[in-house]
Length: 81
Image (cartoon, rainbow, N blue to C red; front, top):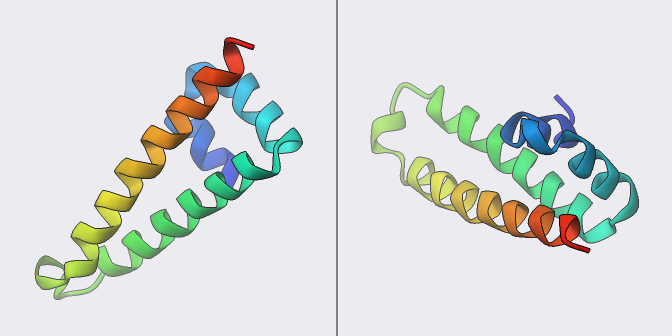
């Protein structure tokens, strides 16, 4: 799945803003790409039989929380301009 599509899934009510920012803003695109990479990595570690004991799982959950908040702020700021 493309990075922008993952972010649209996260913020379906802001689809237009997300797609516009993704096309026009290099920094926003980088955040989306980081988000997609983190989702992919988390899924990899969660699929492991020893996922419950892997510190990476908690680490990626924390990274995704931070990126989600950064995306939320970015989208919100763009909507008020």
